[in-house]
Image 1 (cartoon, rainbow, N blue to C red):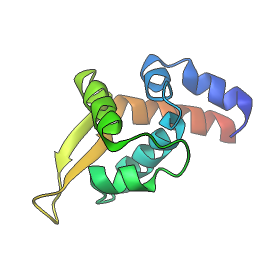
Image 2: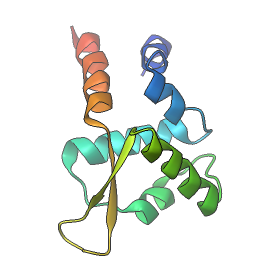
Image 3: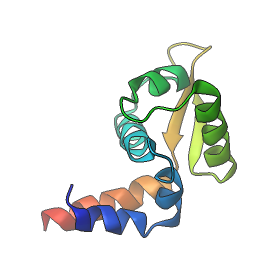
Image 4: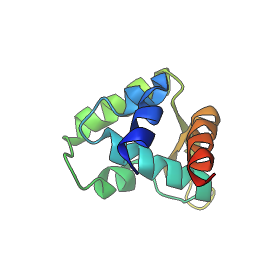
Length: 106
């Protein structure tokens, strides 16, 4: 992704909120992929997948709660494992990201 696309993404308030943390852009990419492809990764697996600038688990969970309170992230029950809680991006945010991706291809 080039700088121009990143700046387009940051012009969206909810994406700017996700990217406010050092690991936020990576988290956004993971959640976007999980949401688009309906992957069955829970909160703990998501935390473990973050490779760069990962914070401590309590800080991550607190940030997820903040994103959830602002309806940026949605918790969903897993269809495969009842004890697993999945994280999904709000459908409007996925749509915004898709719009930027489509405009890049044209």
